[in-house]
Length: 330
Image (cartoon, rainbow, N blue to C red; front, side):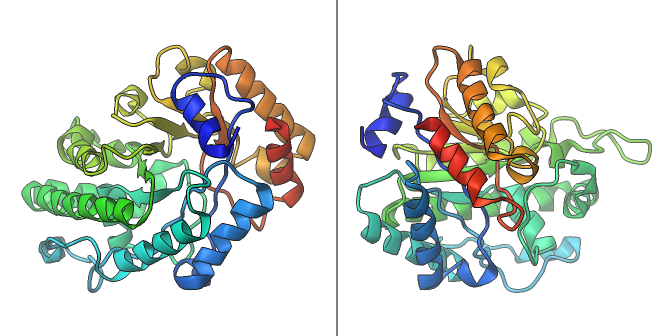
């Protein structure tokens, strides 16, 4: 099968000739835009003969300055979805599509509204693999406190960001992407909602974030390869599994739930199986191969795609382990 045929078989619930696979990580700061970003993606695709090219997106959300005070949230305004950092990502997508044609599916990363607001509050100098300890996330604490002070302004800011991301997502598809890889995380939002020094805010994700997630997906609902990436330790995994997407990716080993737990009921195609934080980093090639085999065993008769549960630090992962992942599916 071709990579497209292989993935299409899984999306349709049919067994392909072998499981499709891919993996991804954040490139250095000098490879996030322009020809350097295009070359980095193509080198990775071709070196490992992956079945899907997940395009990274570390180009900044277009906004002048930093959100430092609650009042600064009013500076978030409607955008066309092609400004500044958006435009740099669109150029990368267009160049990649020209280079690879229709050889593989190519979704592009879109961080949801809460994640984007976090980065406007505290822009990461280096985009590292996820920290599963949601209580350590200072920007999310800032947003929750701001919501207690001015819930209307925070809700409006998230809605504005979400609408802008929806327009950006549609532009990504027009530029050549086969869909989006929407990254969501609810433990950032819910952490500390009910505490001794703060009023209870149950369902904050449902009220102010989930509608923006769905608006982003609605903007690209006809795309063939939209992926929902559930980051962190999901508090309501079932709610995410009900999103209207063809594919669900999450850290089944590092964060859970397991593929075995999800396979009987989740409707989207499942994409995971390899521990991005432990096995890829500190394991050996045989252990990586064993995780791939175990993931397929957990899925039983259900066809799945293989990938790490999230990004990893390439400086700490050997090429031997990455080749082992690729070889295991073959």
